[in-house]
Figure 1 (cartoon, rainbow, N blue to C red):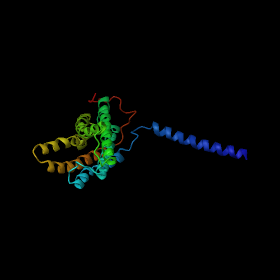
Figure 2 (cartoon, rainbow, N blue to C red):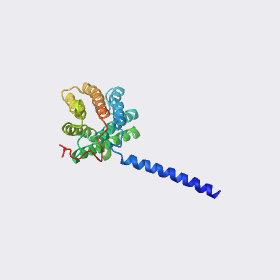
Figure 3 (cartoon, rainbow, N blue to C red):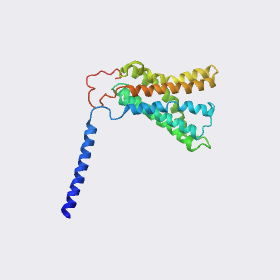
Figure 4 (tube, helix red, strand yellow):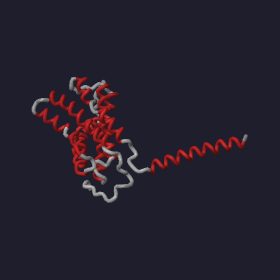
Amino acid sequence: MRKSTIFKEDQQTCRWAARIDDFAKWARREGPPLNTRLLGTIGIVSSPMLLIQGVRSGFDLSTPDRVDAALGLVFLVGWAYSVVALRVLRATGTGRTGAVVLAVQAAGLSLAASQQVQDFMLQEQKPENTLYQIANLAWPVSVLLMLVAGGLTASAGRFTGWRRWAPSLCGLALPLLLAAIAVGRRQIGMILFGVYTTLAWALLGLAVRTTPNSISVTTGLEGRSDPSD
């Protein structure tokens, strides 16, 4: 009986050792560890959320309800996944500048997401705390920061064709909205903003989804110049 028990324990130990060995091989493999096709797909699916949000509210989000807050959060999650994919694919270059810009972008999206969470939980009363005000500011700043990420993406040359301009198109959403408001067309601007964000963020997701996921994060980058440094 004791020999049988020891034998079973040895078998279990061997199975765990094999799993650990498999994980070690996976961790050492070349290529990005994340599925950028999946990240891009999520970005595409989440892209119409601001348009849906606007249609629901008549493009008046002065008093967002829980559904509006949830839709905004889904949009931000998809946006964040696309930003992660940009980093995995080294779209902004292999140097420190591109990495820092995308890290700041991710932090801004996290702050913006905290506003949606507060709107969802405190819909009866609009929060006035400092975090909420910072989170509210993080939305437009994050959009404008896409212009910086877009410039780095275009100059790095790791995205080809129309893909290299996709981040910049996202960054233009806010300037176009402000231009419409400036000429007294706020309602039209809000409608166009919803349509534009759907198209631009879908293109961003499509860009990362259709870019070959073959750039190694540990090897294969030596000897390549990076204009972002």
